[in-house]
Image (tube, rainbow, N blue to C red; front, side):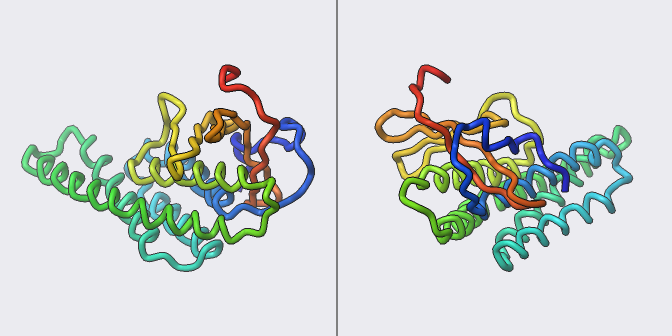
Length: 218
């Protein structure tokens, strides 16, 4: 897997050099790769075997990192099916009756995908919280969980690009905003920490957060 643009050097954050593998951040690498590849593969309808192979690859990545998850596998399968239906709708020769059937099926799949997001995010959160960390590294876990949750949201919604930085609230206390090259974690006291993924090994990532700064800096 190629090193992704969301991975930056630790030195940019002014942090220490401790290396803690983050399951959620590593998952984010896989999803980012999956979505980046789909942007090219979806341009040509006849490349459906490669799209299917890519979906199987993503399920395999999850299996290796977290174990088998029926919910995640179903989410990926439904996402792949929905994408193929959307590609089919682009066919100018498609009969109106068939187009209506496809739209109904897409609506059903969208509802199922929404129902799968919560259990998948819960699995990622549980895996992240099992990682031994110092108390001072709590923000890293929050950033990783937030970024992974937004990644699941994007996967379930079928979004391959974004118009604005997405934000998610966690435990009613923290908010995480994904700016791409880095994330901003806002704490209950109003402070904002700049965090980013750090590549620890091929396909393995951690998260490091920099010094505190005021919210007005963002």
